[in-house]
Length: 107
Image (cartoon, rainbow, N blue to C red):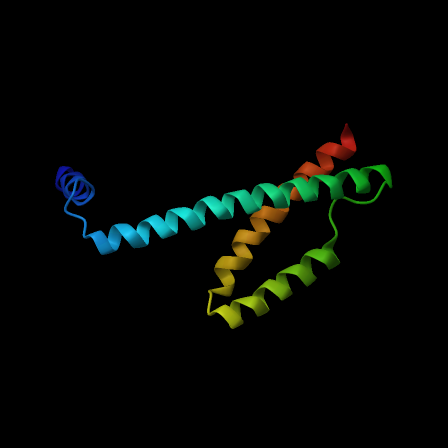
């Protein structure tokens, strides 16, 4: 394992081509934007949770989730993305949203 860590260390200390660093910088920008967008999304789902709690609606809406996942899978085809990856990612996001909605309902 020491060899692996040495190799990784060498790669990150200055032997990295400028072209690779530029691409990585763009990826880092996108990652920051993704986190910012997730924060906005969760703020909006917080509002949805409050509405559901006030109207005594269920936290989980199976029809909405199925519709959303189908829509996302379709987008994957348009953008040549792995639909299983996107489904897994958004299922995790929606599970967190439902947990938050249940917490709001129980407050």
